[in-house]
Every structure is written in C-alpha cells, then in structure tokens.
Image (cartoon, rainbow, N blue to C red; front, side, top):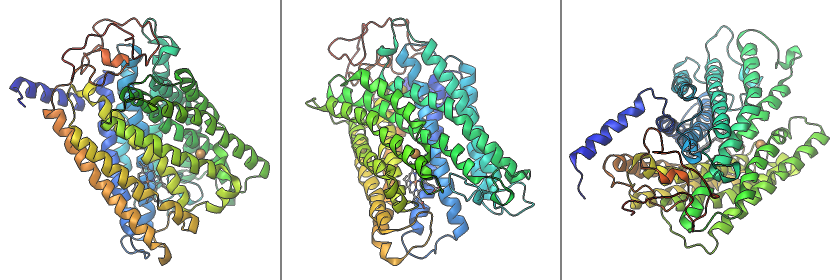
Length: 545
Ligand code: HEM
Ligand SMILES: [Cu+2]
C-alpha cells in the first residue's frame, strides 16, 4: 500500500477543522461524535470502577458516598453526554445529506447548540473536585434525597449537576427546533415524506419527543434548583411540598428519553441491514409509521417507573396497558428487520455484525421490558439488578452497538477512507461477548434479590458478580482495537469509493467526503428508498471496491 505525501497532508489539515468553530452540519456532526466518545470513555471508566468495587461482597475499594457519586455520574454521563448527543451528532451529519439539503435550516443555531455541550460536560466533571464530591442521588435526582447537602454550601455537587443538565437540555431543545424545521422545509425536490429513509423518520420522531417532553424536565430541574439553593418548598415533604410531582415531571421526559435514544438506533438498523443483505427494506411504510407510533405511545407510559411510589391502582393498570402497547410498533420494527435479512445474501462486514448483534439484543431487552411492564412482576424486582440488566441490554447491547454499526457504516463517507475490517471484527466480538458477560448475570442476580445502587452485598451473590466484572473489563479492552482502527484508518486508510457498500441512500451519491455544499447539484428524487434494483438517482460510481 502506498500513500503519497499530498494525501497525508490533506488529511491532516482536514482533522484540524474539527477543533474550530464551523457552521457546516458535517463538521458539527463529527464534533458531536468526537466529543461524546470522549464522555463515553469517561462514563466507561466510572463503570469499571463500580464493577471493580463489586468483585467482592464487602465495600472496600471506595467509600459509600463516593460509590453513590460513581453510579450517579456514570448514568448521567452515559445518557446525557454519550447516547443522546451522539445521536444528535449522527443525525446532524446525515439528515441534510439524506434529504438532499445543503445544510441544516439554522446553521448558526446548530453550531451554538453544539458549543454549549463541552463547557456543560466539563462543568459536570469538575464537581469531582468539590469537597463533598459530585451529585449522589442517582441520575433521577429524586428529592428529598437530592436536596440533602450540608446547609451553607451553595456550590455543591447537586447544584453543579442541575446547572450542567439545564445547559445540555437547552442545547437539545434548540437542536430539536432545528431538526424538525430542516426535515419539514429543506427536502430536495421530489423528496416526499414517504421517500425519506427510515433513519430520517426516526430522527424526526426522536426530535419531536425532545420538543414535546423536554420542557417538563427543564421545569422540574428549575424548581429543584430553587428548592436546593433558594429555600423554596416545591418538593419537600416536611413542608407540604410533593416529591411525587417531581417523579411525574421527571419520567414524563425520561421515559420518552429512552426512545430518543433508541429510535435513532432503529433507524441505523433500517439503513445497515438492507445494504448488507442486498435486499430492499421490508415494509418501508410500516417501519416509517412505526417510528412515529413508538414516539406517540411513549408519551403515555411514564408512570410505569412509579409502580411502587404509592401510585393508585387504576393508574398502575392504565400505565401497564399503555406500556404493553409499545410492543406493537416495536414488534413491527423487529419483524421488518428479520424479514429484510430473510433469504438475503448476507455480507458479514463489521457494520452488519454490529447491526445484527444489536437488533438481536433488542429482542432480549424488549422481552424483559414487557415483563417489567407487568405490575406484580415489577413490584417483585423493583430496585434490583434485574432493572439494571434490562436497561443495559437496551442502552448498551442495542443502542451502543447500533452506534458502532453507524460509525463503521458511514466512516468511509465521513472520512473518505476505509477502516480495517479485521480490527473491526475483533472489536465486534470483544464487545458482543463482553456485553453479554457483563449484563446477563444481572438478571439472575436481580431475581435472587440483589439490590441496585449498593456497594456491598451478601456473599451468595458473588459468583455472578465476578462474571459481570470480568465482562466489564473485557468491554474496556474492546475499545482499544476500535480506537486504533479509527485513528489509524482516518490517517492512513485506503481511499473509499463514493458508495463502497452499494447502499441506496442519497448520501452515497455524492463524493466521500462530501463537498461543503453536499451535492454538486441538488438531486431530483423520483423513487422510493431501498429500491436496490433501480437506482433512485443517476449515480456514477468511480473505482468501486
Ligand atoms: C460500558 C459498559 C457499562 C457498564 C460496565 C455499566 C455498568 C453499570 C453498573 C454496574 C451500574 C450500577 C448499577 C446500580 O448500582 O444500580 C450502572 C448504572 C447505570 N448505567 Fe451503566 N454500564 C455501562 C454502560 C452504560 C451505558 C452505555 C449507559 C447508557 C445510557 C448506561 C446507563 C446507566 C444508568 C442510567 C445507570 C443507573 C445509574 C443510577 O442508578 O442512577 N450504562 N451501569
Ligand atoms: Cu419507561
């Protein structure tokens, strides 16, 4: 393999653009993805500390207050600084390309939304330097626990936590306005709603949820801040405040947040599976509508997180039924993925491995989700490791795997270079095995009664805990081939064709990487997506791999 000098210097100057202020949606998208990956590593490091503590039944590595900070910061970072903003970054990169636009509707607003995040994230991390350390009340930050800081300490971990989450939330709302406007008004001629790829449908559904539900969380955080720092009594039970109201406001956003995280993953599966099965996506319209259906139903299920919060029976029953209804549109999705690869000619390159692995794991996490929607079962396993096992099958085994599928799939488009296949497969197998070793044992542990958010446990639970911790360290190792592959291939990888996977989306019709304005000429769309036999646009494919 030869590299000429121009090539190297060109790519070097390209990498620096990601540190500069830019209003190009592609640069901003990559900035989001790089920044959130940094926080994924921080969150992962915290997870390994937690798992190191849990190898032995006694609490001996960190003290209990610090343990509380560890799981609080881990959960907060993984949700608000890894998955949600990563999805925003990926959608930023892809949506304008996929709908044939030259940029987002509001490029400056887009850049501002991004640049609010690094200071907010660093502010959150800085709370490790405070005398009493970071917030300790879990990622829900329920009052009254979250309000228990020594009086007289105005700047405490909880204060910093609320301020940084408010900044992140405002950034997300601004982003949502931008995405929804872009998808409604910036589509290329002929790009009707039912010619948009499913990825765009899922981004639209997720961003609508941000618009509708995030303001409730923002309001709750502002009231919480007043209770914490300015002596109000909104949520303080001893002064006739109502902590349960906080739970309602919190979950009114935070259950849909699960779908704000998961819908883009479903969108990724809908792009990757057909490309590598060389089959059109099965049931395009129903998958597109199911995205909106999932988003809609998810607005009405929040109280399933409150089955044990002295919730009246009729509310429990109502929310049990609505929660189970989510299984209908998600079932449509799963069926569509299976039917797409059925009898396909499967090409098992790295993006496909991650997409198939992630989709399969979603079936497991989805089934335990329906189990948890059942009130009596949920009461039994409430606050145990069964919950932690269930949601990590979603947030890690499904969504984080989908994110890796996306990174490998669009890497050639973004960087103009190919990644190394062998390293990618190594990364997949380490991740897949590590994730199941880590999170499967949490289910039997929870069924046997091991509580979550504890740093010590009774010795009978140790066996499964050792397996989970070894799995977590394997996951830590799995990031090494990934980082090596991405950095090495970005600098020295062989040049990528415009459409190395023979995929069908509009983004593959332009050069790799695309020019500043995305397309030489705005394309005119005349066919539905995933129409493999008939290219939708006149595509010229130079030196295809
Ligand atoms: C990288 C591998 C990961 C490992 C080994 C891991 C492990 C853990 C462990 C051991 C806990 C503590 C459970 C408890 O005490 O209740 C935890 C909590 C949590 N994790 Fe992860 N996790 C990982 C990735 C993720 C990801 C990708 C997310 C994405 C959202 C995530 C979200 C959470 C949340 C929300 C909590 C709950 C925190 C709380 O109780 O307030 N984790 N994780
Ligand atoms: Cu929920």
